[in-house]
Every structure is written in C-alpha cells, then in structure tokens.
Length: 522
Image (tube, rainbow, N blue to C red; front, side):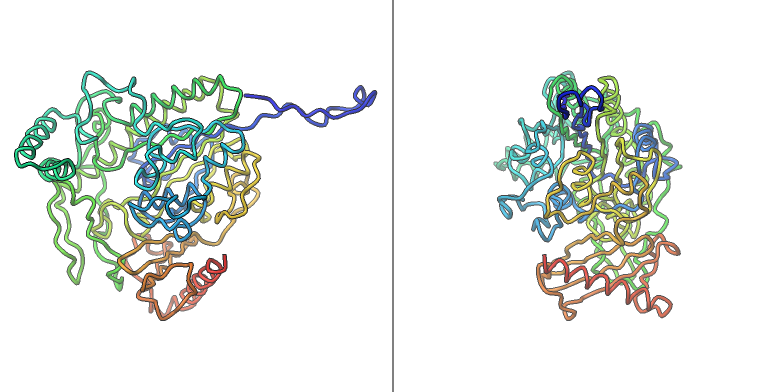
C-alpha cells in the first residue's frame, strides 16, 4: 500500500525531537454481502449449522447479535445500506425502482470511498440488479463490476447453469424439453421463460459437482483474483464480494448436503399466527410458491396459515443449511487468500446478510415481514480496533455500516447519513450507541414500522400510503403489535391491549412518534 509520510521538524530540532508523524497506511475494506442469510450461524448460537469460516471470522472480530435490516427484501435493504439512508429517503421499497431514478445525485458507500482515493471493485450481488443500472451502478466502481464473476473460473465441463441456477442433468433435459414446447407455441422470450419455469423450477438441487459448478464458487475465485491484483497496487482498496446463496433455489454441491441429517434439523417451533396479531403482519409466502415443486398454499384462514407438508419443510430447511455451508466455504477461500497475501492486518472486514428469512415460523417462508426472523440479520466486523471474539446485544442496524466504515478508515463521515458509527461498540468504549433500530415493510397502501430495542419490538402500521416524509397522523394507524423477546422469543402473543404492558406500550408508541417527527424534519 502507498505510504503517506508526514514529516515535521526544523533544523537541529530534528536531531533531538522524535518524528511527530510516522508512516501511515489507509486501511483496505473487504465488504462481504450474503443474500438471504439469517443469523443461523455457529457464532450466533446455531449449534447444528456448520459455518467454520464465518465462525472463525467472528472470533477475530465483533458479532452484532441484535442487528436489523431496514426492510426485509433485497433491493430496498441493499439500497438503504449502500447509501446510508432509510428506505423512505431512497424511495426504494420494491424490486423495480432504480435508486438513481429517484435520487440522481445520491452518494453511495463505494462511491464515497472511490472519491477518497480507493480502488473500488467487486463481484457478485452487492446492489440488487433491479435497483441499479446495468453496470451495477457505474458511479460506485473504479472498474467494471462483475456480477456473475469471471468467465475463466466457470466450470466448462458442466456448462452454464440452466435458468441461472441448476446443474442437474434431469433438470437440464426438462428445461430443454419445455423450451422446445414453448417455441412451438410461439412464445416470445419473456413468456417463454415463464412457461418453462412454470413446469420446471425446483426449489432445491443436490448434485455431486465441484464448488465452481455454481455461481458462488466462481465468485470466490474471482474475488481472490482481484485480491492478488489489488495487493500489488499502491492505492488502498474497497473490494465488495456478494455471495448469492442461501437465496432460493437451494442448490449446493452434494458434499454440503451430506453435512446434515435432514431428520435431525429443527422445524419451526411455532407455526401459527400470533395470538391477537393483526392479519396485515402476515403474507402468503408468494416467493417460494413460484417454484414448481412447492404445493400451492391456500389463503389465510381466520385461525392461521396453510402449512407446507412436513416432508417439504424438512427438504427446504436441509437445502437452506446446505446452501449456507456452501457459501461459508467460499467465504473461507477469500479470507484465506487475504491472509496468504499478508493483507489481513491492514484490512477492515465486514460481513452482512441483507435480511433474515422465515423457515416456517408463523407458517411463513422467505422474508417480506416485520417479524424477528425477517428483520434480524447477521453483522460481523473485524478490524484492528475491535475487541476480538466479543458479542454486542445492543441494537444496531444496516444504516450504521456506512458511518462505521468511515470512522474505521479515518475518513470524514458525510453529514446526511441516518446511522450511527458502531466503533464505540467495537472497541468496548460503550455498551450501546442507540436505543432501537427501525425496520419497515409495505402491505398495499399500509406501511409497518418496527422499532426493536434490546427487549421489545413495537410495530405501528400506518395506512393511506404514509411515509416518514409526512407529518405523523394518528388517524392513519391501521394496526399495532408489541412483543417481549425476554418472555416470548417466538412472538406467540401480540401484547397490544395487555394491561401488564401498558407502560411499555406507551413508551414504545411515544418512541415511534418521536422518530416520525424527527424524520419529517430532516
């Protein structure tokens, strides 16, 4: 790395005074994103999950145990994290809005580091492609971004993954068959893809193939390639690596499936609606129902959701675990390369999953809610300032990553950021830097805002397309939820109206109103 040497001294004073400045190096940043990763990792207490590489990273850094995303869906979560402002500021609440269509001059995290003299580059899924330009946001990168990794690392013997995911010979044959059938019916490209996936789009795949048969294996090799090149450069680097598993479909080489006994993996302990919970809090697991081997779930009844058969639940949970272990192995390859190149000591590492994931709790699958399983997300920092092997239970959220990386890198923080630097928690200087984190999710014309403290979650559902850019209006409230995670970690009871929690409810509601008013004034 290029050394910036500060020299100070005049005449003979140089002979008797120590140098006031020494050789200084800007710290590199290794920015690891993981798609749909909930905190079922060994370092988060999931004893059955086999994630030795991420667990080792946790021992060399700080694990944020009560971290939450801003919105539990890929594009809005990533848009918020990468700009350091909340979804109501980015105005990205869905999977089709382009960040810069709404905010042409918005400043992104990698863009800011590029402006500070860093080489910014990356591979894989960092932004959701549906929310940025074709180059994965050209303003952010010093060189062209490689969303699918480098061609030279793809497994040429197996060929391309059909439908972007599958290597099974049986699936490839069926895709070819239905593609031919669709062409006979004169279906155009978009309609043809839908026709094929209606007939063959499995939710999981277990095939005995090498790691680079699938995209994440290619991404790991591509990231290592960039590390080797960046290690020879004089400029500091910001390398973003976005792994795509465990996002559906759950495809991973067979050796990762073999790590687990399907019948010993835990099913969700509570698969009902919360008692007294508003129906607006739930969804029909539409994402997973788009897969051809998933039984169609019926509409919600008054007492709860329709459930997937236990056999299918176990297959999906097994697939999720296998996919997480596969991804963990790829993370390990990148970290090993960082060490072998002698870059670890001068590199800040942050690993995060863009949101949580329902694995059958409340009868839900995927994300798309304000419940704990959807908003709670992994966040691990490893940096020279960090007290290694510590865990933080205080609230944190993804908007805190931007200011934290600025402080760790010695870069002045932009004034407009919504988050708070977590450095005092990394160093052990403080036990907490905020009282709560805020997540949100939209249902039609209603937006639910979730406020998570160390113990409680309060969710306020606001109707009529309310956003925090408007003045708060209590007449727009269409639903409320309150959960006590010290006594009810499964969210079995909505405590709104419970006399025992009247004071807690009043405090949490006042907190939400204060937040709304502060956001409106920004």
